[in-house]
Amino acid sequence: MTPSRLDLTFQALADPTRRAMVERLGRGPASVSELAQPFAMSLPAVVQHLQLLEASGLVRSEKVGRVRTCRMEPAALSLAEQWIDQRRLDWERRLDRLGEHLKQFPEGEPT
Amino acid sequence: MTPSRLDLTFQALADPTRRAMVERLGRGPASVSELAQPFAMSLPAVVQHLQLLEASGLVRSEKVGRVRTCRMEPAALSLAEQWIDQRRLDWERRLDRLGEHLKQFPEGEPT
Image (tube, rainbow over all chains, first blue to last red; front, side, top):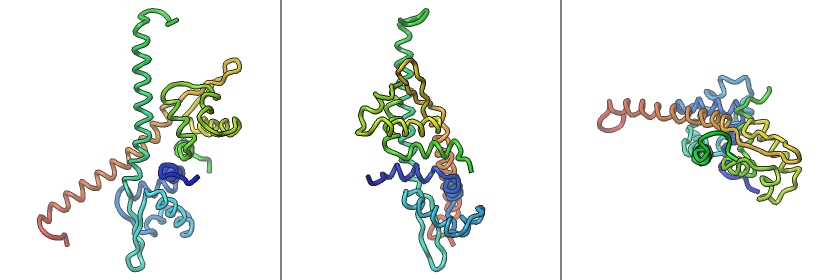
């Protein structure tokens, strides 16, 4: 089965280096070497992480001259956020229903 | 490196079957066989997905007699949500700063 956009996004976020890259890019665009700088990691390893981030749509990059500049793409993050929000809504609705149900039993345990 | 709670949570959410299980549990507890029911999948495969969900903290399960009942744990989901929210905040702050910057150049391109 081809992984969906949501699969790829959560997969991309499942690694601390990739999350740190997204954190950095959330504050503004950066070149590949700027992104690599905080990590004790080979450039090919950094590029591999970036490829996963690009495949997920969380990051896009553009090469101008010899410099590749990376940017965050908030749309992919929104997709993940919406999925999580929906679970929270389901959960809250369920608690509301439970609350309504328990109101029928003002004292003691429901039977 | 030991995977962090956030690594495990995003990893757990990176699979459509596991997301479907969390969606189901968001609407209320379910037994393992109820969870397995919508999937054309062996029970061991379902149990393996559940183990990843439990390792991440998204789901907990409890065996009473012969029935193992699974529940969603909203706290793990909140952790992932907070991480994503923080990225969106960074991004919005950055857009605000850009907006402030561009106000200094009411016409034409900033130099």
